[in-house]
Image (cartoon, rainbow, N blue to C red; front, side, top):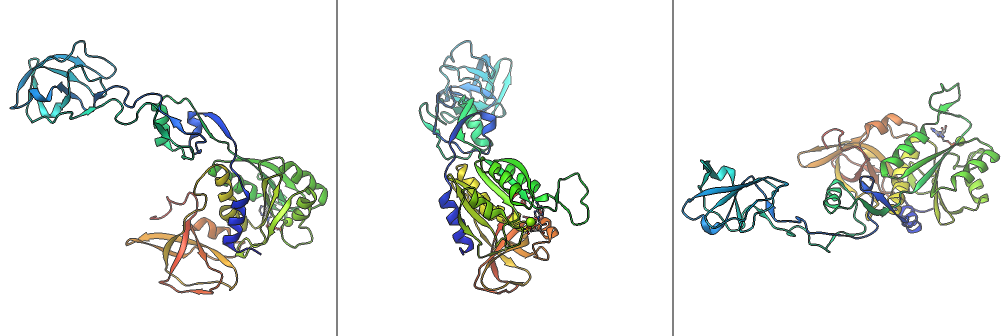
Length: 404
Ligand code: AMP
Ligand code: MG
């Protein structure tokens, strides 16, 4: 049985990068570039003013001269004449620098009256001029393959005229829930029934990562139904199942996956919650059989499935970095497994403080909604005292909770 860390590295060793596709620039947000992007032109593409002011020659501006203003050039326009020595041209931010000019005096540093301007401060050569190509040169690689596209990259790509970019494809993730007790959202569960909530949280988590969820439906607790739904799920790029992966009499997921040709790489991990996780490979594609308790389902998704999906989507650091937090209250666990404890983090006096977010049983959903981080407690210890430093990572989407 692999440890928590081993299980994740086994999974990451088995998953490979998705192929590339061309997408419209707005659709590239959050995706990873699959090719280097080369600048087709200089940025700026023409020398222009960084300020609203007066285009001048620095050499004309010693001893607070008064210069005639011979022209006006707005952004998007051009000066109608070159700058003659001893003159100034009024210029707006982003307007092309007129021929003959080498510096710009901001409006606030000049006094204009009767078509003349007095330059009241010394001028440094090239001040407030943005020179053609000073940001990016034609032919230069502006973004390398492997770059995550954020709004900043979108601006760079748009500035360079890239209407489409080549990015790593989003994997389609089939979700199969299992269980006779499940009813769809919208139905009132009868006695003994529960809402198929895992499908909703899994789909949300998959969407949140930038992958595409495909809800296959519910496999009922018989072999026929499992065969049908799991076979359907295996057509996607990744299959994620919920429940039916433990040792119960009606836990058919592993048996049917094997029957359908999935090679089970491991079943069970030395971690709680999430011990009964199974991981397999089908025609090179990853298959995750997650435990059914919603808390375990979500934690195993975050810890084991999410890094795999991020790696498939080209992310260079698919595993969340742990960082230290100081325990405010004691935490206890059993010896032998890593324990993933749902905690509430608070930033205070230059450090993170962590306290348990509530009862840690895997049936307690409330503890999950109160938590903003997971503490990863090592297998070989049982008690962690208040004041001790532990390792944590943030739960996705939690940065707006409390004073983080
Ligand atoms: P199992 O692994 O099938 O024994 O399921 C473990 C627990 O998870 C049981 O309490 C199930 O009722 C619950 N469970 C299974 N599937 C889901 C689901 N799709 N949504 C919410 N809870 C579930
Ligand atoms: Mg079940």
